[in-house]
Image 1 (cartoon, rainbow, N blue to C red):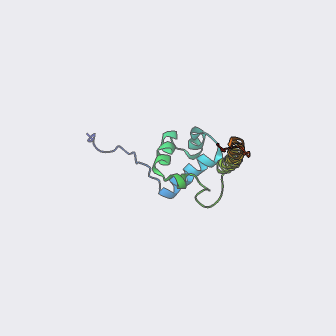
Image 2 (cartoon, rainbow, N blue to C red):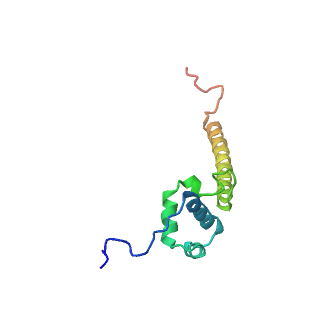
Image 3 (cartoon, helix red, strand yellow):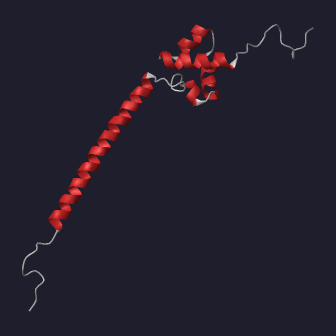
Length: 117
């Protein structure tokens, strides 16, 4: 009788880090679900999620780490640019209002202002 502690003909599949990285990049850049990509690669979707947690964010992001821009990155960059433009515009309006308030708040200067007998 065989011992229950020994594996019974099953070998555990091991993947090298390059394969894990490419699998996660493929999943993120394709826009497909983890289930679809995992099925294409013959993996469990849970394995893809685990690999994504193990990899550094820049490496898992794909092109962003290599100097390229992903569609999500360019969308975020355009949103940031729009927010910075709006911020600059609002600062200009604030400065104009401050100057206007300063001008309107100045006391009227007349010849009799401050003159006492």
